[in-house]
Length: 237
Image (cartoon, rainbow, N blue to C red; front, side, top):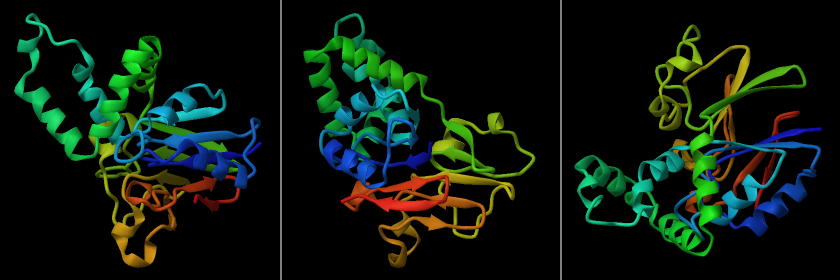
């Protein structure tokens, strides 16, 4: 029984993802943590992937900033009527502009299609995202891990996880020199590793206290799958 983690799939094709899991020897006895940002930017916007994830009993999904943007724009999927058109406030329009600017158009389009074809599946998907936690702790082979999408803004070892708000956990971009807990390995994505330099493009970064597993699937690079048992990394196609 092994534990794996992946993040920032951003519309990566489901068949390729399943081949990645197979290459790592992933089975129904193992557990997979998806650390946010399944949606937006590519393919069908991650809709098929989310529907698949929802159906897997051994998958654990944590929310990313792109799913948070989606939820902030859930009004897009309501029928526009004379009664609710006045509820399109400047704040909602600001959320809409941010999501579209960050690649949400393809996801919105495919969610509208899903709602039209299978409204029950659409509502289940939206509830699934609403219920997703922002972080998780897991112990594997005597090592403790904290899984979170973006990192820990204004980190302090004395600060409790509940003292961080969503923005702190979902939008943080740690520097290479940042350090977190001495006795817990923090695993996150959100910031493609190529942002730290060309030498890191498409590769996982491991430091003394944290691991960044966003290998750049948003930009067309293969995603990375981390096995927490031994910190081995498997890369997609």
